[in-house]
Image 1 (tube, helix red, strand yellow):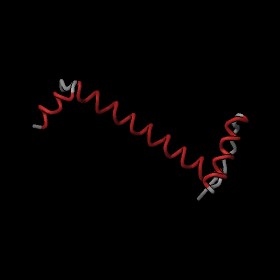
Image 2: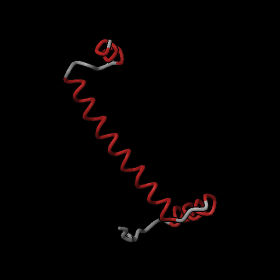
Image 3: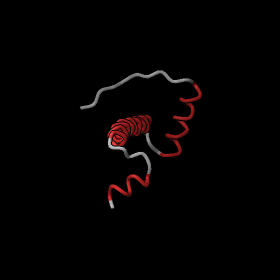
Image 4: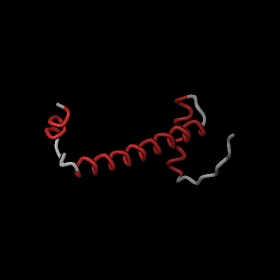
Length: 72
């Protein structure tokens, strides 16, 4: 199921979006969906990374050498 969302963009960003649709032969929705997917993937990665770093530091792992020692 899809739902419509209305957003407001600065003129310069809308212009870039419209130029990208012409160059890529895609529509605005495709570009915005892809941008949102990338944004949320990056947020998930950052969250996972922060948890992993906290766990590693709690175990005394701070450097690449520490990781190597753990896995060797």
